[in-house]
Image 1 (cartoon, rainbow, N blue to C red):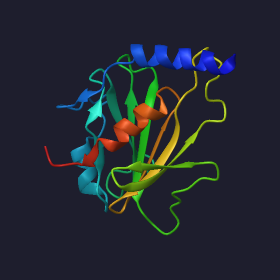
Image 2 (image 1 turned 135 degrees about the vertical axis):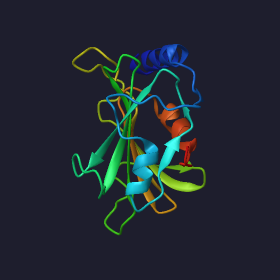
Image 3 (image 1 turned 30 degrees about the vertical axis):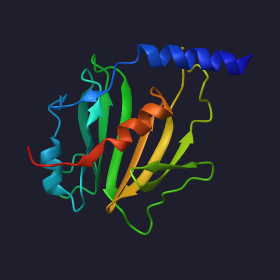
Image 4 (image 1 turned 45 degrees about the vertical axis):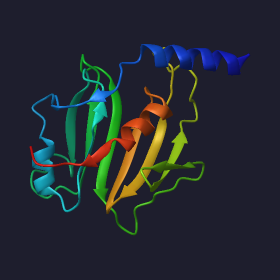
Length: 173
């Protein structure tokens, strides 16, 4: 009975999820550093998804924490329209020999010809402490020298892959 219930819940979530659309303008929150600014301060290509819901906002976190010039890596935090829930995180850093693409239980996926790995959360399909369905997982791949790791517990594997496949090298605005 668990399997059919999971399909029902997944169908409902897919039907009520905002439609992915081509994003023309990035909506930043919290006076975030911009993608254009990040691009100038890292030594690798910066990728941004072209297909995210219009009502998501973006905050960019840099590491080391609060570093302004020598940014080793960064995370794109896509939040809901009320800026209350992290929907999707995308970390990016320069690919090194220490950067791992695989995880022990990950399944190989294709991201526009790049070998990627997806691992769902151990509690996927269950309700969290707030009563919300846990979905998604951890998706990682290397694209032209940039290691990208995407995570979400609120959007499905299929939506994560759709967003990942829409990622392109950022062009100056």
